[in-house]
Image (tube, rainbow, N blue to C red; front, side, top):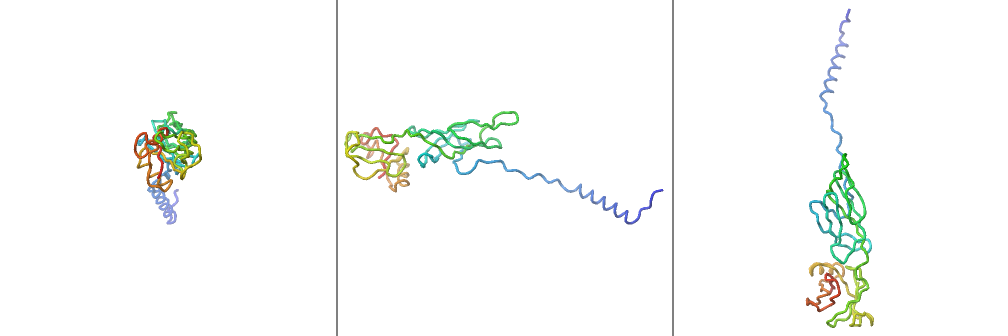
Length: 232
């Protein structure tokens, strides 16, 4: 014979029903979203959509900025010097593809990040931190002038203070000792860029192309690189 419901048993049953109903009404909270990894800050970031793009990156050999060109094509990339007389020996970089990042060194590379089917993922951006140049600029070169200027001794590296001088000779030998003050030589595609570099590197506001002193072709040092400028 069933036991009669007492007040306490009735209240307990009601409480259990209310608890079950409350649990059904509580929404399931989503798991906290995890931020996708990003390459460390500190370098020059080039988005794939903006490629090819120019960037100025610190040269580990000289401590100065070097202009490079970053090209991203699908899963591959290259880092090349902007100027023909500069050679890059290496570079440090980080790329992002899909939701992962990849660090490495070298002046070219490819994404090693794959999807579950093993297909390499396209690069979304590349960060270049530093480059290392080879010593192939004309360091220690003597430039002769067919128009009567004293010889010019270039000591390098480019874009550094007091990296050249003229000597008491006019035959391309740079003999006879230094004459006049030390000179600062910078590299730039045009006079306005070179002048800005001169102001930054040497505190001088003007630049004259070494091949075309005073703006006249042949009136200077024709063996100097075409994008070398002397500050004054």
